[in-house]
Length: 219
Image (cartoon, rainbow, N blue to C red):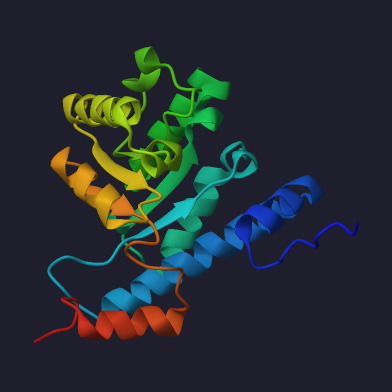
């Protein structure tokens, strides 16, 4: 039987290939630059009291680059985006590989003014003992806890929410796909959600049509 071919437009298919082949650094830098350009363009086109911000994932190899700080600073200067409107996401497994080095890099990125988020939080790698050492703004609850919100998973989500509140961090629940999931998360006072319930991935043109119709448009 023939092996199904990977679709080149699905990140979980092409990102591992790019990481293995070494192209992930160039792709990551391109994505960061384009995301910052687009965010600044939308801020200028759709001015609002609550300016748009953009969130960009960093791969493990990107985060390990000795010149990452220079790259981020250069792209922010080039694009004109205020660093307060850029959030960088790093998976918790990457942070736990080398606590001291990770903490040092996070504090340097924070000094630039960017915000920081831990992606896929709760997947088993984290040590809560060390979480307070990182200058993190947001915890993103892994979709595995949201997809099946039974009693056990609800308790885990509740614990993460309480932890984030005590550490003065925001929380985003990943993988929200149904009204039931959203209602349960809302009952737990989860601040934000991400997933197909809210929107499928959009092109730039589709996103701009949404922006034209919402609160970002000047009266």
